[in-house]
Length: 289
Ligand SMILES: Nc1nc2c(c(=O)[nH]1)N[C@@H](CN(C=O)c1ccc(C(=O)N[C@@H](CCC(=O)O)C(=O)O)cc1)CN2
Image 1 (cartoon, rainbow, N blue to C red):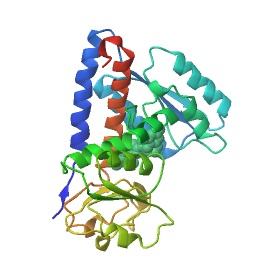
Image 2 (tube, protein in one colour):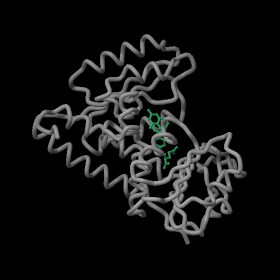
Image 3 (cartoon, rainbow, N blue to C red):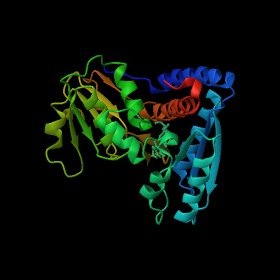
Image 4 (tube, rainbow, N blue to C red):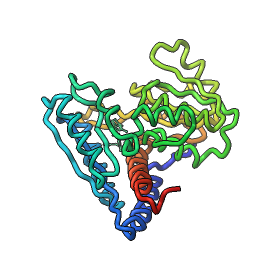
């Protein structure tokens, strides 16, 4: 039976650790603050933003929500970003993705001050990650590394297959694993004979957004499987449930797997808190390392 890595428990521990760091900042008169920008009414984004706000509260981070209507123009959003960049009481800025059609997401993310870019999506932070020179790291890959670190000590020479080449997960997790000396193969929708490739992997990170894509026979015995996919599907009973990118019931021969829900998702939010606290510490001279 594969070990199920408990992302919720790990996320709760990170949140508690963040709360202690926030207490230290408060003693110095700094209250970490995160601006959360949501444009439109995408139901999944609503859920994620609510969770972010709730978790910020648990850690003592002030969250400031900016909810803008779906018809908001790119220029109005850029103006808001500039205002938040200039506000010294705001330590982190997060623009929930996806943005509505008609707004150029890359242009918006480029405008966020890299020091406040707690999502790690600004080109400066992307470049720092690629060159291994620090910066803020995207939350989902950061969370995945922590989940992996709970079962793997040494990545040197391990074969990792990443399924999906998104800027949010696929590319940054590949960079983080390369830094740890793993041998990383990034695959995507055009990759041929995917199962042949995954069968050679010690670690699989499935981030394709394709429900139950990864079948049992794709995985070699003893592999570690990180399931990043979250798709809401309606069952025969008419109820909706969340499924990942992996056919979990076929993965008994894996060494460890992450569940959906309760795996990568909660870690994404915990790492957002961690990045926000780090940004606040760096903004405060007393904490500069
Ligand atoms: N600005 C950003 N936008 C998006 C990001 C991101 O990191 N930054 N990632 C995803 C969505 N996301 C965070 O925003 C996210 C997704 C899922 C979860 C989560 O906790 N999932 C739960 C299930 C939740 C449910 O009931 O639907 C779980 O897996 O247990 C948190 C955050 C895209 N946009």
